[in-house]
Image (cartoon, rainbow, N blue to C red; front, side, top):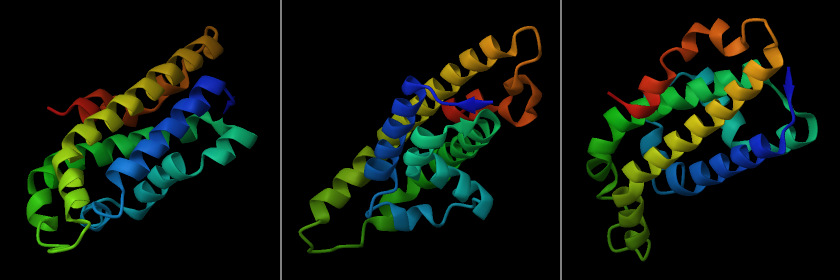
Length: 160
């Protein structure tokens, strides 16, 4: 099923803007590269956060969106557990004496709350997709129930 829905597109755009500005910005990106995430997952995350024009113009397959959300949720879980506690140690010595020092401090201090907001946006997108999926399934099993990797999504987004 192709998804071409104004609310979904707007939410994907908002998600991408938040990710680029607050999570994968020039200050934090070097630390993100140390997360143990495979290339396929990085590609899925990039497709979700960097390519809204494709979604606007052509729509996107529901299964692909679910895979992108699941990869982004795994990213959130790893970043929360492996990166957030050590971000200051990893990035604190960079830019000493630079005028960007204040911006770096802001990026470090706000990383956990920005990650939580990203997780909340992912969850909101997932819930809206499930609603569409359930409505369109019309008596059949919705796609999200056929994808076992989505069963842990809530745990990945909320932490535990």
